[in-house]
Amino acid sequence: MKLWLHHINVVSHDVEELQDFYGDVLGLQRQTEDIPVRNNSYSAPVAFLSDGAVQMHLAGRDLDLGFRSGNAINPVERGHIAFRTDDLAAFRKLLEDKGISYSDYGGVATDSWHQIFFHDPVGNVIEVHEISDSGAEAPDANDE
Image (cartoon, rainbow, N blue to C red; front, side):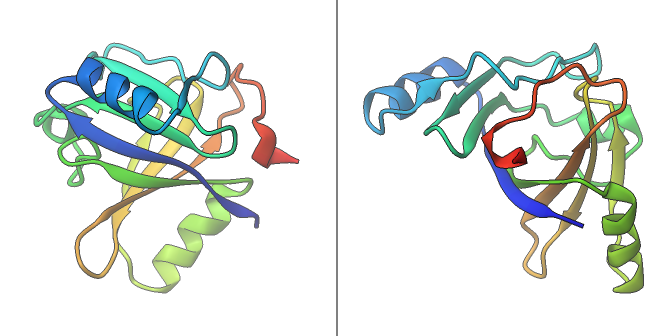
């Protein structure tokens, strides 16, 4: 099972302000490739930036996403750090073997990724996702 840092998600009520800040101050570029397709479950604004290696997802705060999707963990309440894997089933088993609870979002927020979310020991939200079989997304540079 391969696992690597894919993106950092920052949540705000003003995504455009964050996009301007991270672009103007840190020089991050808008992403035009490797952008997940959202479905109707999450309709808040989103912007995708990158330094060329790691992405930054800027998302509108949605306090009700966990309730609407039936999940205990809400990844867009305060943001999260995300890793991509090539074997989500093996990673879920690892969590289960270690007694770590997780929320399986499947394709709730994106049609092209299968996402799970869990907490680290101090309560930070962590995402691990795998490109779904139905995903039409091109692999990013980290996939090599």
